[in-house]
Image 1 (cartoon, one colour):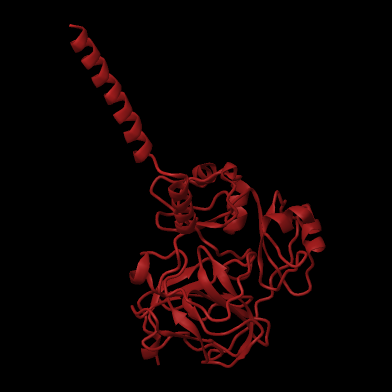
Image 2 (cartoon, helix red, strand yellow; image 1 turned 180 degrees about the vertical axis):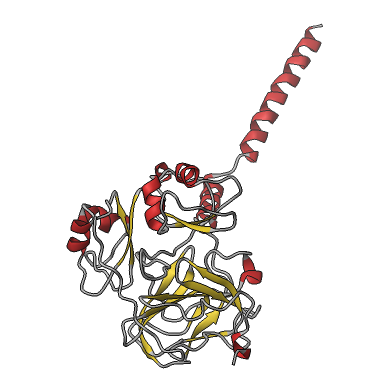
Length: 337
């Protein structure tokens, strides 16, 4: 009897030892954990990695640059649709497509901004009627959207909208001690609309001042939006993008909405913006001639649809009318006589 008790006790002890050894060998070593952690660190990205069409040459990313349009209260730098309030801490301007049943008040509430902010950013009045499918600009916070004009300084802009310079610099992540450029789009947090605003001077352009920025047939795929932009696409990625007119490359960079972009300032003060590029083939400060290839058509940034099917060029004109806005969607300018 004692034999069986001892035997049984020995079996139990053996099982316990086996369990302890099994756990020991199954647990990862410190080295394994270190390698796993390193692997995760190397593969974690806040945003997706650039696709094959988002390669650039001499790219100087400017954090404070925005995809933008022209005149009045310029705006462009759309963003994804969704209900994001000020508490989300977002800093980008968003694009929202009006849905059935939406009202200006409900949209402002959805994004956590004041009704006045929504109206000012979109040049609307409280009595304006919005329709499903219409695109609206949504600022990240209540405030003002401002396009920098020739000769303006940060202190003047802050004074105009009763805002703090430090807040403008911090919110827009301005570099080089708050340096700004003509055509920059600034969000003025908490800014108040002044009683009088100087009108933006619209530079008159001759019919032939701009050429179509992509090869024939140069099809318009979206009409005037963001106030002064149109979209072009021939349904192909990688096609060349041309400078619509000669000038100096003012800026190149990347925004999560507009993707890789080139901004050209022309001799008459007009600025053109080329967004969603696949490649950038010029550098900041470079002089370019009309028709020079400055990049390729791509789908960088936020496009609809996403991926290669969304390849197109976002062409924006600031401080002048967009001469291509008069043509209906589907027009092939390579065939227009």
